Image 1 (cartoon, rainbow, N blue to C red):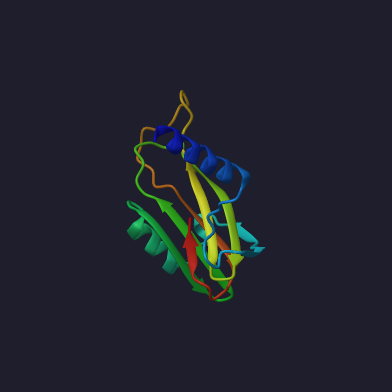
Image 2 (image 1 turned 90 degrees about the vertical axis):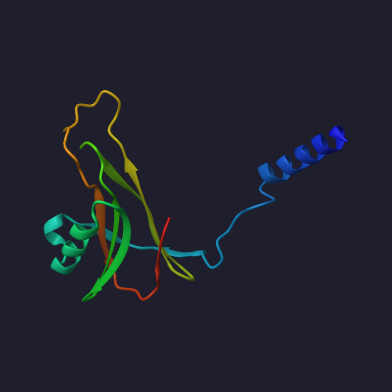
Length: 136
């Protein structure tokens, strides 16, 4: 019995490593990357800035349309110190939605950071599209 389980595990691992199994989100086939601008606080529309201010203490994800722009915001909630940065991973249009990914990067070990609470977030502006935004 153990030998059969071992053989099955090896076969499944081989299929996985060979790429025979893949996980694909339905309708997530990339059509094109979207151009975007990372915004300074002063470049964010006032209505959106107010919404960010209300939500900044918690982890949040939101999108907002104004004029010809689509604004996408990802907040990482309250952090105990300063020294955080956010790295954009991707922003693209797929068949079923717009996909957005950004990562919070913490301060490096030994880095001198402010001992004050911070609320890191990123706000980007891209072309206005009607698809829903999926945060990854």
